[in-house]
Image 1: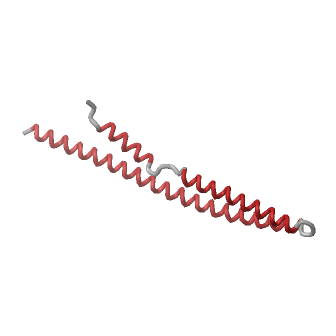
Image 2 (image 1 turned 135 degrees about the vertical axis):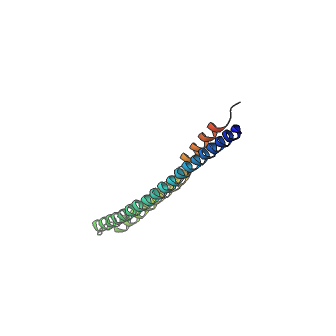
Image 3 (image 1 turned 90 degrees about the vertical axis):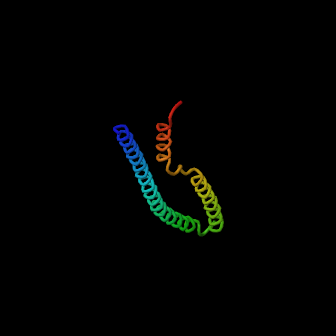
Length: 125
């Protein structure tokens, strides 16, 4: 009968260890989700502030340049600035698409830890 108790205790320890591993991985996953949420929130905030300030600067610079050349080259300056802003917008759009494609893999730390767990728990021949 002591053998059954030893086997039962061993199974209990194995189950406890397995549950502890799962709990740790779930906590890591939760932390990664929270970090990603905070990172996106921060990016949106700083991006919107920067976009507003750059927009104001662009508007004021455009008005300044048009007023500066009002008497002689007003239409040429307006056309040149329009082309300049259009191409700058295209560059920003391309940068946005590139950043969208190159996003980091979600849950990479959790997946690496789970792969490490599987490697450790898999019996070797």
